[in-house]
Amino acid sequence: MKGIGGYGNAFGCPTVGGEVAFEECYGQNPLVNALCLGIVKADAIFKGRAEGVGNTVFYVGAKTGRDGIHGATMASAEFGEGSEEKRPTVQVGDPFMEKVLLEACLEALKTGAVVGIQDMGAAGLTCSTSEMGARAGTGVEVDIAKVPKRETGMTAYEVMLSESQERMLLVAERGREQEVMRIFEKWDLHAEPIGRVTANRRLRVFHDGVLEADVPNEALTDAAPVYDRPWTEPVNPAAAENVLALPPPADLGQALLQLLASPSIANKRWIYRQYDSTVRTNTLVGPGSDAAVVRVKGTRKALAIATDGNGRYSWLDPFEGARLAVAEAARNVACSGAVPIGATNCLNFGNPEKPEVMGQLVKAIRGMGEACRRLEIPITGGNVSLYNETDGRAIYPTPVMGVVGLLEDADTVLRRWFVEEGDLVYLLGTTGEDLGGSELVKVVHGKIAGRPPRLDLEAEKRLHALLAEGAARGILRSAHDASEGGLAVTLAECAFRGEEPGLGGRFDLPGGLRPDVLVFSETPSRAVVTTPDELRIAELARRHGVPWARVGVVGGGRLTLVSGGAALVDLPLERLHEAWMSLESLLSTRSA
Image 1 (cartoon, one colour):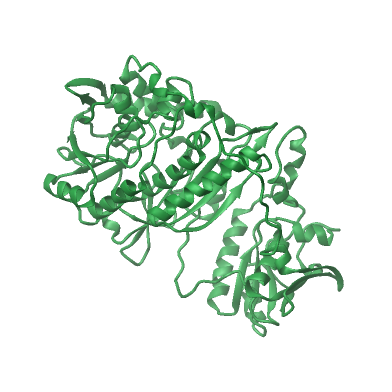
Image 2: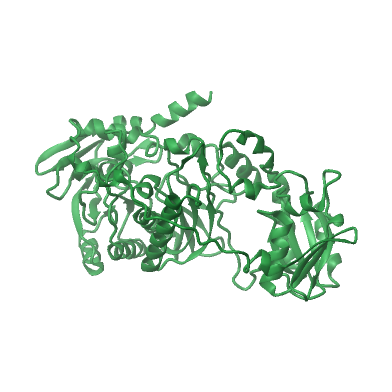
């Protein structure tokens, strides 16, 4: 968290939202997946291509050091005894340098002198030079003696594989080199011409005129060996356990308090208050709602962003877990009133050389692909993080999805909490017997077991369409998806106005289910919405084919859940909110 806040705050990029999950398996392999969203004019997109034979290849940014060498290969190995020795391969970032480099690159791009640009990430110069040449069907020659270095005696091998941060590779039009160099000089940054674009489709590396490497670009990119690893069908005996046979909690109100205080559900203010979420003044909805929303300055539009990934679901069933991750991230975006338009992902898994882990990866990718196709959400890119194992113990298979949605009118954005006393509260979707992998089973019964919820993608898609239209037409006042913790947690969170208790209500939940299943089931494709207009919400739900039920009215300082005339939960909001905020006290104490 300090790394995210320290870099993002100094860099001037708002951290507007996120997802946090706590499981024992992440203790030795903590996962940090970051989604960064930028805006570009459609007619001013620059690509990582080394176009134009004879054009000049520029190295710009920070100097190259030995930090980060073999960073990519370190990430492709399990941790065990002696792993501490590998820590020097972790790069050391400088957010102020990154900010200056960003501004200088944007200024250089505006001149028209730059024809291609790529960052130096994994494998450093080796990756950026070979990939830019391969994409353009050209070659690249570089002399690493011209690369700015902060350490003496670096070999060609070290320079080409260093993953030092805050560096970019640019290709500039021949004859316009001085334009580029003047801009970077103004920003007090290195801009060194280290090579040129050639026609031979090869990467050639020189050191003071001595040829050190000569490799076809394709051999390092598209023609590189492709693994076809053996895999086995993932079978988890825990998924076969009948969790409905577990004894129901004696006190559903006490169980709700336990869930609200559990780390994965509790309020994360202690985390997000360390981040600047409003820098650049475009944040409309920051941390604490279903999705973050940022306006597109100069237009009426806004973008909604949400991330999601439930490792427990994917451990029990990788195929279904990945589908559920896509659906929930998209549903969170839809609950803000936006239409999902694109997605990215990070696939976090153990050692793929083990057939059972490779099977998890295969199934998760298939599940993700099916969900994205059915929901018509294109995957625009992604990342993988494999070999997440320590001493032979792997993390849960954890596909994390990031979904971006578009609001045509930023004024129609929805938030998750109840807005007006007297508003009507509706449940969209139906509740099934879905306790497998749930927060209730984990927190109350101390188990991770059962079949994860089964997802109806057509029902999910209809719900998204209803939410987007309901927001755009001003029918809905608020919306919150029902997920971890079921309807009880969902309605409690609706009653919390951010970091303060808000408005409660008495809610009569439909369905003839067992009480604990009714309030804690995690059936997907559901949302709790509010509206002042019963006729319009009914017409909207009928037209989109989404089941709906009026469950209550916003008002009062208590949360009361009723079914069949019997009160299942009846607690003051202050007590519920205190449980929900308890993680902050716990984490503050431990970090002191």
